[in-house]
Amino acid sequence: MGFYVVSAWFYGEVYIWSRPAADRLGFTDQGKNYERIRLNERPFFLRFMFVVLAFVQTCVHLWRDFDKIQIPIMKPNTDPANATVNTSPDLRKALIQRSVNMFKWASGTVSLTIVFGSILYFFGFRHFLWEYYYYFASYLVSLSRTRTSPVGLPPFFSLLLQCVIEGFLLSLLWQVTNQTFNLYMERPPVKKGKPITDDSKDPNGSLLNGMKSKKATTKAVAFLELAMITDQFSERRKTLFGDLERRKGTTSQQITEICLAEIRLLIERINCALDPKFRPASEAIKESNTQAIALVPRIATQPLKTTPIKGPGDPLVTRTDKIGAFVADIAKSHSSPENGSTAYGRKAIKNAQEKAEEAVNATEVKVSGLFANFVSSPLGAPFRNSLRRTASLVVTGAPYSRISLICNAVTALTNLTISSLTEDDYGKWQKGVPDIVRVFTIALTKIDEYVAELEVHWSDIETLKKSPEEQKKGLKEVDKVRECLRSGLEMIMRRYGEYLSGLGVSSLERQEAKKIASRGPEMAVVR
Image 1 (spheres, rainbow, N blue to C red):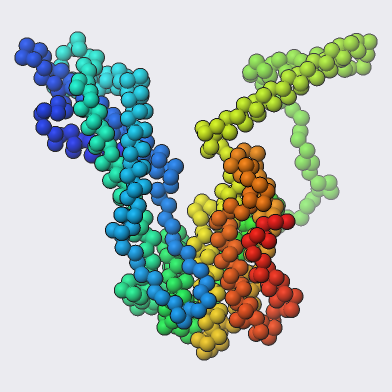
Image 2: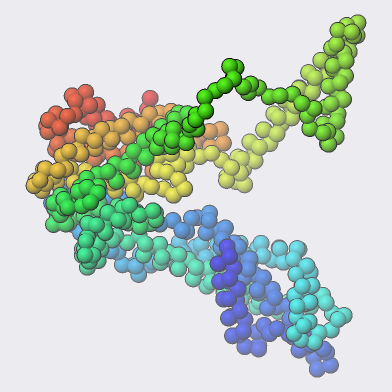
């Protein structure tokens, strides 16, 4: 919002000071020859509308998520040897394709600005802001002290037309800037038909550093490059198997660990969603390390009491606390053994408590009904609990989606596993294949289990309108992750299945992997 406001203010200043005198946008209005100089309200109104445009653009920006960068997702290739290189798209063509949406959102933003900006100006901020504006201008020019009220905006139609045209151009400029940056960041990491790390002195080392980066964008691009290398660049793919001289392990070993870590993180998120008491192994180790060490033996025979100690309590400040204490005293006096004859008092108190509880329950029902009606209205959309957002939050992670990291990691591991049958001269990759099969199987099992346990929240009106079978078929992000895992596991079992028994994979694990890999999305969502 701050950057939009500064951008709109600078754009407005350049426009106002570059217009001719005929537009009457000067700082002051000379008026007639016998009149004193007056402060001009027209540029003040124009500046106000530019600031409102910045606020509206901020709301639209956050609502439509203009900062969203969609890193491409690679799928496992059935024939990596015949893959084609994915070149970078032309930015100009991509912008032309999105031009219709940019014009539409720019027009909508300006329309909202004109409506809400005019209401806010004429019915709210006009006289309030004008006092400060006049006070500031009085130090710059000599103004009449008797004319401190706004002097009007004639001709208003031409001024409004300027707001519409310049506001549309400014909003369109913002749209083009956002889309250009997003398209630039979404381009595949290819330079002159080769991976971008080929220019490095240590290509595989640079690739591993990018995959270990803490920056989300750098890490996502590195995973995409790895998936493209395993899919489209056979010569570079062979170097991943033959690069054995590394301090932290061979290149293939580090790639396996990093990619499997993303899938294991997915499994931990689902475990936390299925069982709130679940704690990942990393957190359990930290808790065990932070436990206090008993250096001095216990001297007392009895352990210390942990129950709360009754004291005088906090002082009564509010009126509610005082009334509650007064009622409690009455209850105590009527419940004491000395006042057994006054049982009617206890009965009256009990009746009063029952009526109070009924009133509270009635109020809660009424408030819940009003809140339900509000959530059902268009204004209550931000307060709804969406089934798709909840499932995407658990499966793809937060605060930013890790769907590209997960799918590209699965694609890279699948392609390398299949290619290792003919390209791994040293036979190092096969040691990690059992872990790959097990992790893929567990991830698919956990996704199916989580989707089966999902329940639609009462506020998710759009999902409730669908049939029970269609409700869980609209989880697009979850379906993408599951399909990527399923196709990868299926390809590995088909090409590597006969060698798994010799690598330590039991027959029960192989049967489970084949079973889960053969299940389609329709079978997975139905209990």
